[in-house]
Image (cartoon, rainbow, N blue to C red):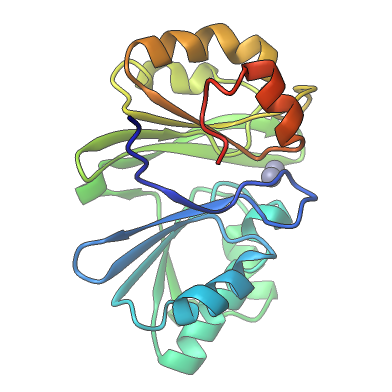
Length: 221
Ligand SMILES: [Zn+2]
Ligand SMILES: [Zn+2]
């Protein structure tokens, strides 16, 4: 039986209808969001009243592709101007502050940090495309050790954290150009599953085909 700490707002590949994004509600009226692509702002508006009722909104931004960061400045500006709230962005993206600035988000609307102590959340630098820096992360949430790759074409940087991992969220693709090639990753994923790790596939460009290749051994819903 899997226990899934993160709930997906969407798990489509880059040009899909539901940008890959996930969240978890934490104690003390706190909301942790993973990525804020161009479809995410409207989702938050429709389902969470734009997070306006949370005391503490934290957003991991893995990299600056639009399907991951397309509405982060919009969200920060909205919470600041409409509700007088400041969000925390957890990110090491080199051009994030520049993005916030050129899209008109005042510095008072957000702070950028690179880790979160009480979640043991640490960003893990990886490789996704030549044009952008990209990060995944590991964290311990509600007693579960989580590893989340973000968009990546290699699993190398995450291997040390998979030893003691309860939930592994992995970028998945068929061709493996800028994303993990599912066929190459299969032996590792099966090994993890045998050791008790729940594996969640995300950023799915062709869910049916991925499920066919993996024989539905891993979570895609
Ligand atoms: Zn993406
Ligand atoms: Zn990307």
